[in-house]
Length: 288
Image: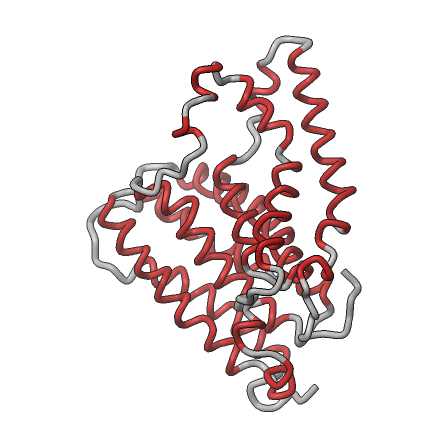
């Protein structure tokens, strides 16, 4: 591999952190007196996120070797291709839903038959700006910047395993900016640090899964649908589980464990590169 001036491993890692810094900084360039949940702030951050989606591909282009760019187009490296797209949009979503088998069962249990038949339960609320932020704009822009525009760089300098494990670090660190926002809204520093550290841990764990999906499928759509679904479900409510009466609590706990076991068993078969027509052009190493 030709490691010229722009193609050293250290520079590629630095490029990943530069993208993370720019992503967070873009959210704060607006001079606004409102908090992050004010509609005007949300709309401005939409613009910031989409601007980062225009900027980030340049990092992939400038820090990739000519040899790699001769094998595949920039769009293919970013996971933006038609081959295997439908599979990439459906199978990872089903795989992630299996992982959430227990929480899904608990959510269904709390619904009345009338609520379950309500179309609004299944239809996306695209008119709601907060729904758009949490389930479309944030997953789309974050997966594009932190996975589609970082994994192709890391895979040129690291083994797939190392790239999958390293890629979530800038993603997790980037979420620490919420700590400042919490403090500004009156949350004590100690509480803000604890909450932000917990958020760093689970966003990093999810980031490993997301980076793995991108590597195995070669599609940006795969981590995007997984991210959107995880945002929809939220972190599993173990407190609500423990509050259930037996034997219902035992049934839900069993489904929680079964979902995890089934997800582990199906993870490799359902992310087989051949299902997604993924040629893995950026590396010949396949140790993941």
